[in-house]
Image (tube, rainbow, N blue to C red; front, side, top):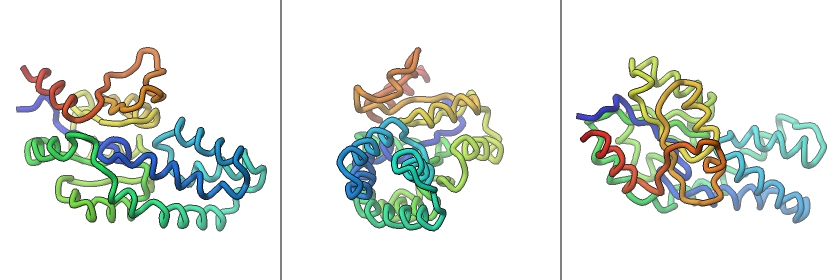
Length: 219
């Protein structure tokens, strides 16, 4: 038996090695404004993983370009971004051990996704990757991550301290702290903002290490 009542996963950078797919898309959408703006967009994206794309675009428009964040323009940017990233995210390699981990725990512990990808797009990605059947539910950026996490806890009746959220971004860690759940970072880059927290949260490079850690907790 597991010590946990539920496992919850971010998607990009946690289940799929797809963060750079989105980095390249943000860069491409702002290259026309010059290399300095594009570089600033990339830096912000890397420092604020897990923030919904619409919020990032709003900040880019107002803070980098100094213009009003018109809702129609935000709609256009989000649609263009989705077209740029969808196939790349579907085709991205898995984080090592992720599928084996899902197979190991499916049917033993309820599994959920809590991602900054819009709900409809997330559903398409999970279906095209053949992952949708592993999860009881998948929640995207139509609501804040902490709100998604609170919904999962409330609807499942899970004790926060017996729920583990796997994430790779500061927003994931913040959501876990807000809701009182456990948190395990999936950290594959020594420059990850998670490692600059004091203290740094518990973290693993991949799901082979995560599986070893969880198996150790059960002994």
